[in-house]
Length: 460
Image (cartoon, rainbow, N blue to C red; front, side):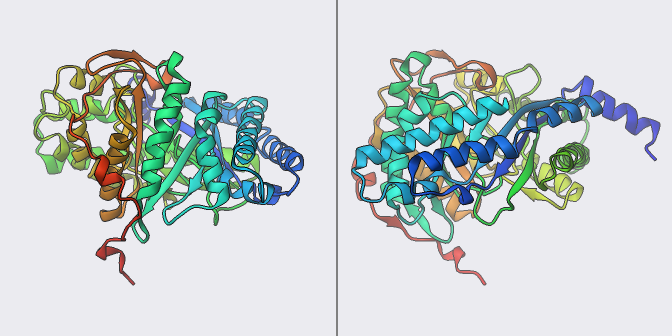
């Protein structure tokens, strides 16, 4: 039985503090769709997605209404599309192979539109040690694929703790990010908002753009991403007299309750769809809405602006407490599971950047204690591909050495310079263009090759 206090507290979390489920994501295996005939491949993919996910939106909305808990987005993720390309591009010229890859992106888009969900993840390649013909065709096609579709998201994993870092892939992704921004220049380069470069990318994360349905996953699984920054901010604001140990305990208890809500929703949706329940991603994710800010939590701990001295320590305490509380609430932890700090999606981060308290270098330091990495960071449009590649390598190194998932979702906004304001819209929010170091790294990134795996990977 629940006490009256717990009932009231849950009501307040939902209706006064903005508790919601950020996403319910249905992962779908597409390996059985492989066919050498390209038209058959597209037909198989479309048919599989629209059949397995046919009732995802309907059932998610039904569960949402039953429990009175908002589900912000409903999404799908699929087997990395690069794997499906291999058999259908044998002996084809590169240009034609890339055209076929774009065709699969458009098939994903049509299927997503048919079932009525928000995004499709899995236009992806896993290349931490090298690439195949399918990988390179897909990677080269990313700019056109993302600029010609609305719902398709792409992630490329270029680093793993046990494999090291593919430096050639980092340089290639610097070029791809530049081209993607250019092809969506009429929308402030927003194509890059659907593209992430990762180290240790989890095969079950429900969050875009890093979501894909990894090899080793079940035929179909429901993965849930929780939210709750508003809930935790209120707790911190009401705890000014507490020391850090006591504050961490309160955050941990709140995280436990938030995660239980997430698991309840996920299991219910999975049961209705007759598929397996996968994981709860314990990440606390902000939105541009008032009160839904990770920066706001950090500042409520006693820091003037996020990015000021102490911000990394505050984020470390928050992330650790969230993980401890969440892991006690579910036996199915997965995904990124940390605190997300996407600049444009967090109004507090944007304000901190505007006043000069938050820099890319400070963000990089903060990513050492969270899980998402440099996320939704707008930079000047004339930033070179080599500099972008070097920024990517810095984040990959942090992820590999610390054996944790990290990503880079960076937007070189065409025609914009440091200090300019830029609007992306919706959940992607708005931002200020952040300055990048004027000093180059071209000779460094052009060495190419492979960063060896770190010594701490030699376990077991």
